[in-house]
View 1 (cartoon, protein in one colour):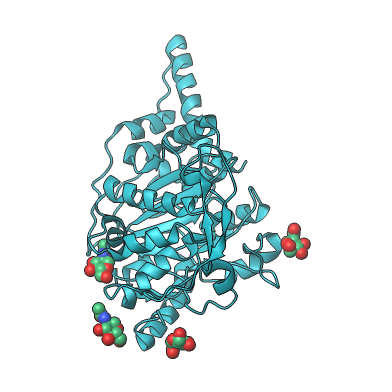
View 2 (cartoon, rainbow, N blue to C red):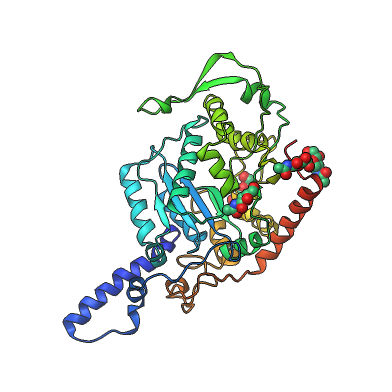
Length: 403
Ligand SMILES: *[C@@H]1O[C@H](CO)[C@@H](O)[C@H](O)[C@H]1NC(C)=O
Ligand SMILES: *[C@@H]1O[C@H](CO)[C@@H](O)[C@H](O)[C@H]1NC(C)=O
Ligand SMILES: *[C@@H]1O[C@H](CO)[C@@H](O)[C@H](O)[C@H]1NC(C)=O
Ligand SMILES: *[C@@H]1O[C@H](CO)[C@@H](O)[C@H](O)[C@H]1NC(C)=O
């Protein structure tokens, strides 16, 4: 009843096909239950993008072995026809699981197939805990997304253990009033204990050259903290403007490439690479909002990862204005509560202004659609807008947060 929730329309298609076969045999005609098939056969409505239309997002959703179903559930929770999605299961997942993901990415909801905006990384990347291959996978995803679609505005990284706290209509609405130049990236140059434990050690990720899975290893030598650029660290979860992604991927300026060579041997490089590139580039350092826009709770003292959120945290989650939260256990009951109370999702995608179907307990309102270029923000957008305003004011006062 969880990831399967998203499969409901797919099962309906199967059921409808069965009804058609039976009705053909018995000669009686079913008319009203055809809509999934009819809808799926028409071409998608015109999608308009650009400065005078709501912004669109390129979502990179990554997970590992056993994450197939929650990636699909998360996809349903953040789906909108105007966005682009790239799903990645790292090499530790089986070919069978990856195959299943590709099938569900096509069939779970009729809109996935008609709009054709959900993609799966076919040749997966390794994901060594703490190694640099995670960063390579993110850069790979970013360049694939640049190629897949030339109109999106922001690149968003999500993990299988994340979940949204706003609808895509809310997100688009709030981002409409934000200059599209901005990047949301939590960062700091105040290294503290990280200098000894993260910056100075030299590590090698064997997944870059070995076919088999292995842990990273540490060199006996340490190296000095860089002097030719300033080292920044922060959260690996970000929302980055398209121009900045192009800057990192296309590399006409040598900074992103030089730092990439350096970060190959840095522990947990995805928590420093983009942060150091953006803050060391004159072009982009004034465009950073110092937040990852995620709701998280940390243990005291903090562990490597934030605490798993559960039903006891629901009230705090609801109070938060953040558009995403992490992290959640697979099928934790609090996710159902978020679906029901915050996203108002029953089956398939989160309903938005683009969904024109009837809302009832047997039908998915997003199995039919008309205009996908309009958005209708809900009550959550206000909370998020207030949060955004506070970041925005701080940014205005400081002009650059890369200190
Ligand atoms: C991203 O930011 C740059 C400036 O930093 C701006 O010129 C550009 O329009 C933005 N890109 C998009 C796709 O909005
Ligand atoms: C960034 O901000 C600094 C300090 O306010 C300013 O001197 C610099 O010109 C700005 N750079 C760009 C590219 O706008
Ligand atoms: C939620 O997690 C906290 C901390 O791990 C725990 O104390 C609490 O009992 C959990 N609540 C539920 C409903 O599982
Ligand atoms: C500006 O940046 C400084 C240094 O990072 C920080 O302490 C401060 O809270 C920021 N905001 C304002 C409004 O000064």
